[in-house]
Image (tube, rainbow, N blue to C red; front, side, top):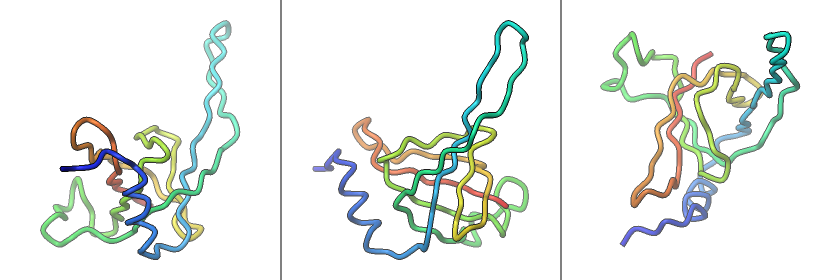
Length: 117
């Protein structure tokens, strides 16, 4: 039986050291009257994650580059591919290219994130 408790992913990820991994979400404020969008302040959230590179078989040179990082994080914070959101790994900001949910039985337990400088 597969548990749907996100804390299991947190406990597994806490056994691996990934340094400092932070999700940086950019808040957008829309002014509908003037039809302009202004960027708000960035909100940083520390997440539990494991960072690795992609396997050679996963690198195709177009969608997945050899310099991309594979980040597996717990589901405590919802992660999506927003244009201004970033993943900060050891003080280096990376763009979120792709996010895949690990969700057996319909409950998100973890995220697999493709990140690029």
